[in-house]
Length: 62
Image (tube, rainbow, N blue to C red; front, side, top):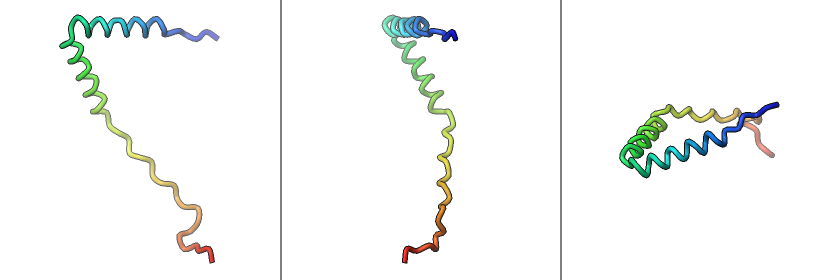
């Protein structure tokens, strides 16, 4: 089974981001702000409801 290797793509992307930050810091900050804003605007799913108790609430250990 062939598994694609993304190592080169990730390395190249990191290189591009690093060169963008070093040559054009204002553009890099703007891109980072947009990405962070998009992440913050994503709806947060509600927490799951608690499980129902398996023992009735009227149970006592007498």
